[in-house]
Image 1 (cartoon, rainbow over the protein chains, first blue to last red):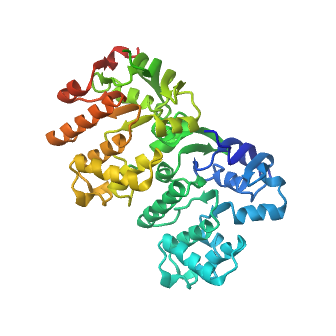
Image 2: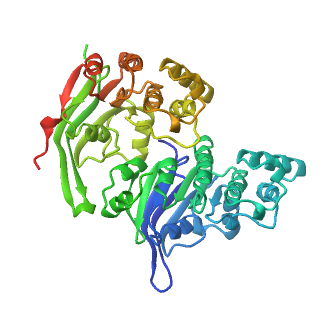
Length: 259
Length: 234
């Protein structure tokens, strides 16, 4: 309990041109190793919030602060462009909903992983290759597929390649946007197992945005429910799912089909 | 010798408000007071629907009480679980309160022995040692060895429950909450479960249990607590 926060959102709000509210007055503190789930229906502002948190979209109001190595809590949007890019290549990882946004489709799977290794200073080809092979192996990509282009992969394989690419830089914080969206159920289970191992074994902190309550039940320690850009309820994941207080959370939980 | 107070429930009330049913309110219990000392086991009684599970879940911060306090001894201080920050609630669950529910929430692709070991790893025991402890416990609960490396999704109710008991009892939690820990077990395994619960008690665990089986209740409980006496006025 003595360790310092990793990420802090203070009154984070974003209003789009035209007055459309993306997200409003979002506050939370994330500690190392913690997983925060954000749920809500389409248009509830969870993706806008994720963009603000991950440095992609400057909030109209409020602050996002991250514990930069050796520098303490820094406002993400006050960092210089090179500093922010370095952060994105090293301490942060973003698992995009569409793997095409997180991978270079014209570069081999091994190359995609190797590239991020080079960004953190690796230079020896043999080392990079063996590390890439190892990383891809851990996400269950066969060695014989390492030189293939990700566009020849299935959706699930692309998603796993994206994760391997992120993990090589040993990030401290991973943002996930609908990580299991668009995948078959059997493929989802495999991916969830992988993501779960990642947060449990590597102690990576994560912010997971999804509309799938089963995903947050499995992955996240804490949960925020968003509606119309605002957080309507937050708490321990099982608390919010088993004893939801807000009318919207109750509706959300009661709308899920029991398999 | 008076034993140390581990859990103290003060004026705890719970009412559900069902917004999807036009805001109907469902009062469950009103101003419950209960204290449990180290090494003692209190069995919750009361007819089905009296609120035994709701009370037990409130003691784990799974349900949010409407008012009142749940004080737990955590790191040598009495802390109100209901008002604690989520981060502290998680820490209390990791270190202080163990919970054995009636049903195992299975995780796809994770073998039974790892589900059990994981609970020990979360408490800071290293992987290999945790796995050894998990196997020893599953052995004691007579779960066939061929099932240890299988994810429990396909297990029978009794097999799943044994995984659940092993998971909850692998560590010496200072406070244990048990919701029908022996409901789907045969006589032999029920005896093993009772022995494990008695060992936890001997090590000083303060236990609150729901258990319909009167024989088991008589064996493990030092006192009964009738939840229906706190029925809220509807």
